[in-house]
Length: 625
Image (tube, rainbow, N blue to C red):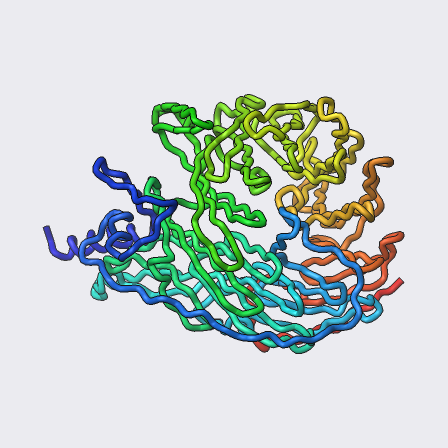
């Protein structure tokens, strides 16, 4: 064969290996499974053998160093009672695009954060801007940056961003062919700013880790970020995840990289970094396995789940009894299972604790919950002949109880664990709301169910006897108030349909929902369409009064203009703040009358990377009623 053809063929194979980023690992008959839960690699050769083996690929990895620092103390002006981000677990904060401390608004917009003086609303104005260059020090020509969200903690603003650094790469050093491939090197970065004086934010420190951000959580003054990076094979070496300390980077230590010996797909690294905001210390851990789907964090543990589609055998252990179900690989999607990894968390210490499996796939993190050392999960078992199940696992992730064959032919659309009760919504033509008792972990059982038109995709407990549902019916957004005082006979106490053709971010993003039980207040954005065309649309914040005595009642609608998307709503004191791409609008909570508005960033049809130094602080546009 012609040597040039051989070179081209070799090059294409190398590029194919790199571009897929997927390595399948098949356990051989003489494979010895290491002891312990998710063991760490002791040397690079073990990593190679686990990922399939690469001759000639060996090198040492360097440990990373932690950065020590201090934060200045200070105080702001008077603040008022305010709302917080709607989160999955009470007491565990989540990053979002808008936060408030009761005096200032912090708004993340593409590649910058704007700080707005919000309370009292008479003083509504822009205060300062933190752009991507200041926060990350990125190269605007070669890198792209995106601010995913922010957190607030005791005069500290935490910015979570994604940076994608493009790298030119010629895998075979065969420049004569003129073939280059630009491999991206994405990382997730946590940058901490002192905002004691919001007009002059002071950069404190930053840490980064390889991969795209999956979730970020904060408990007290500890921040936890989970990212996912692909397994890349370059120059006969596997690229290990990197840790960034400011602008300096080094590969993660092999002792911090764990793996699942039973994994059949080792295509990615799931990386976890834990940061102590007070001491600026950091710890890291990585797991080599499949591609993460649902991630859930409780007060003491972090759970990472992986979905698997293949034929073979599922083994479920229920107490001391093992049940084995063999399924042919030719049965379409008949074998869908989920592997769950549990990591214990104590401060910034993270350690693998358990591994388990359940049949089916999880919809989202509302389908998994930990209580009293038991993990409860709700799954749908297939994409074709669907049925649903609930599993209870002990602290070692062994299945100790199950409830199977729920709602055949339907799939889970929403779930919510409230104490020892699970509210579960499945859907195909009508909306069955199941009330499931989990008081006895070994014997989950259905207490009652309700069938109503449409479906709910988000459930929110109001009190011990009432649950709010947000979903769809006949192409329109619908709000339902369910009465579960008698769990054997749940009832739809009240309902409200938006009408027309409508949609809402609340159907898939719970952070866009503002609910306050004491104020009996529900607010979320709704996008409505013209009855005849989807080209004409408008976004509004729908404000509801919700009470168990009067039901769901529309209080009013707040607009920001045609074809402008409202993203978040918050309240400070007696005022409601609605935030769109460019505008902050203030309305009185009592009657929703207009008070004022502010352009925090001029709207642009092309939200490209922000050019440092090209923009200033916009003055407010007063329109007070």
